[in-house]
Amino acid sequence: MDALPAAAFIKDEASTTLCNRYMAELIGAPGWLGKNAGDLFPRELAEKMSADDRRALAAGRVVVEEQVPTADGRMLTFETTKFAIPRPGKPRLCGGIALDITEHKLVEAQVRATGLL
Image (cartoon, rainbow, N blue to C red; front, side, top):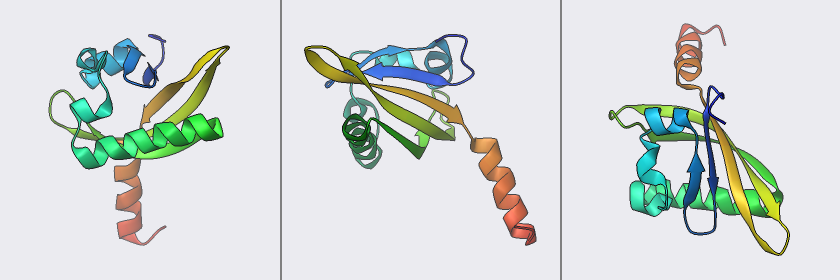
């Protein structure tokens, strides 16, 4: 997972259990291990993340766009694919891969402002 140019994580029903180096460095994820979204983010964002996790577990896979604060205080926009990881005889895990689309969204907004889109 450390070779991915994206944030990657695995959560159990209570907390984040694994994250890759990208997530740890960019988003400050070492503090995430053993914690849930409600421990780390404002209530509204945490509730959305938890709801998206539940939808992914129910549907098998969802793709969401979310703005997440980084360790240095910036807000980045991610396209996050969340997916269920089955475990025989145990509750499923929720995995995720989050691609930083911040620059893409900024360029898209600039193009829209010019009327070309």
